[in-house]
Each structure stands twice: as C-alpha cells, then as structure tokens.
Image (cartoon, rainbow, N blue to C red; front, side):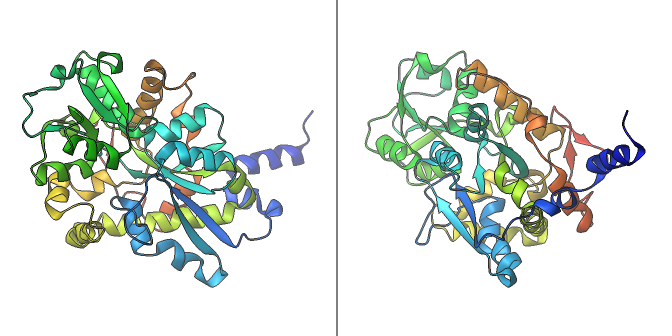
Length: 358
C-alpha cells in the first residue's frame, strides 16, 4: 500500500513544472547551446532566411538570454538539410534543432529521443514551378516528366500531398533528389520539367526563368508546421536552460506577431538576399503574422502534425506511425506563456483550420 507521503510525492511529480522536477539532477552548465538548422543558410556567417527563427537569430534573443551566464549559442547549418540534422542529433552533436515536418518525423520514427517544444511556423506555402516556356499548365500533366525536390525534407511530404490531390504519386514521374539550389539550377538549365519548393523558388519566376502552376496557399491542409525540437538527453539534464530557450523564442514570436513590426520583419528577412520584398508580400499577402507564427500546438497544428506522420507512413517514408500529441512537450511553452502573460496572445484554430472563439 502506498503511504500518504509517497502519494503526495507522486502528486507533486505530476503537478510541478519540469524545472522543479529535475532540479536535483541538474549537471554542470554547458559552455555552448547548439542549434541545428536544416538548411545551408545564406551569407557568412550563415543566416536563417525567414520565419520566427530568422528573427530569433537576427535579434540575438538567445545570445542576450545567456550572455550573463557565459553560455555561447552556436548555430550549425546543414547543406544536407533535415537528414543531416537527424544524423547530428543521433550523434549527440546538437541540443536543439529547427526542422520542417518530415525530417523531424523521420528522426522520431527511427528512434531519435526528441520532443517538439515550439512551433516555429505553420501554413508555409509550397510552389510547383515549370520552365517559363513549358506547355505544362497543371500538376496532372507532370506524369512521366522530370521533377525535382529534396528527399527526406518537408518539401518531399508536401510534394506527395500535392501529387495525391491530382491523382499522381512519385512513381508516376522521374524524380531527381536535389537540394533547393541544385533543383533551381537544373530547372534554369533546362534539365527539369518541374520543381517543388518553398518561397525561395519564387525567385525563378521573378527572373523570368519559371512559371508557377500550383501553390498550397488555398489548401492549408496540404501544409505542415515546422518546429523546434530538443534532444531529451539535454532537456533531462538541463530543464532550466530548456525553459529559458523556449521563453526567449516566445518573446521573439510575440514581437514579430505585432503587425506594427510587419515591415521590419519583412526587411529582416529580405536582408538575407535570398528572397525579395515582392516574394515575401506574396507569401504573406492578406495573412496576419500572428496566424503564421503562433508558437503553440493548437488543434490545427496537432492535426497537421498527425496528418504528416500518417502521410509519411502512407507514402512509405517511415516504417511506423506514432502519436503527434505524445511527441510534443508543451510544458516549457505553457510556462513561458504564463510567465509573459501571453496565454491568449495568438489565435487558435481547430483541426479543420477554423478560428476558435477566444
């Protein structure tokens, strides 16, 4: 029989925040926090081009949070994108990572001990571009054609969804596995019939190289969120630092969700040089920043995460499915929202994408 004292300890284990739970096990403070970024970045040193995490990096939110502790923040960029990030996580070379839906899902499906702790973006558009002179007018005409996207990334999952909407799958085409830069170069050289990509491929249209035949802008169910994940080994050893990281990210999301800062947000993204103001205006036209960059795991985000997991399994990109809600750990996020008084800061949407009344 459980004693009253033991019962009370068990109750505390359920109700206390993570920082209090693991306090006795906290180890020596690490000299550096290592953030993996699933892209090659732009510039020297490399920069994140768009999204919440671009604001976090440009505004030095994490560096300011940990300066007094003498903890450095290391941004590690990977030309190999999501698969390369997963390899680094598996080798304990990263503490956190910023990934689109599929790479993080693949990592979790093969046993990486990660938890999603922050939503870094959702409803990001995927575009299908064909050469400007091409006779192709719709996705269904890609059957038997040469198309490219980077396998193992969020774009592959989006591509499979888009193809499915038009009665196709990867086997119906000649798919080349190319990173974004390689795919765009191949399309410009006339070696491809189509390329799938995110906002960066709009530059092909701006330069007259390509023409857009499809976008997920009007089909949010075809999109997937991106998230920050923490390696559980780090979170277990340093719950206090994990909490401070998430709180700093929430501060950045709060600032960039203010429409008064819209122009400055877009200017920050544009300074990377990889996207233009026109591309950003198209991507975000008529869309409040707070809708695209809410940090919480609301029903819409969880539904898209679960859809991504199930689709990855259906498309045979992973061997087993798992529960999206169990993969997330919202304790740090909930604590950050409470401490900053931001519990109702962002709109929430149900699984179908309908706004939930406050």
